[in-house]
Length: 118
Image 1 (cartoon, rainbow, N blue to C red):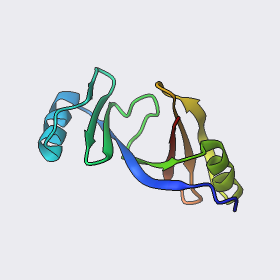
Image 2: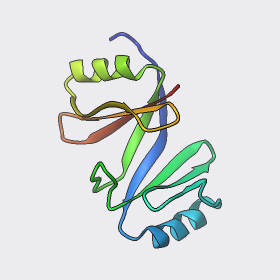
Image 3: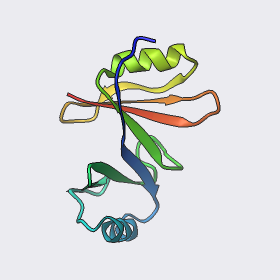
Image 4: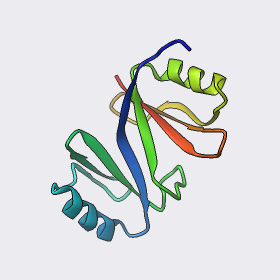
């Protein structure tokens, strides 16, 4: 292992079928209005956590929540986890604002998200 840092899970994306209804539930749960509110993504920031709502599972086609591990070097961490047996589902790419994400599949088929803010 190279020892690249993991900062923990700070971002979780949730696929939703009805964005308006989900937005109301998550606003009530978190006690804050959405920070980002668009037809394709609603994002909340609460207590250091980022919670995103993706209508229809978003472009990733999610069918269950996806936790993103925040890392300091996404390329190094991706190399580490693939060397350990994970398979790349979605390679590193910029989703805006310098935020890099990637998705891997662990040996049991679970999705793991990696996220690096520049």
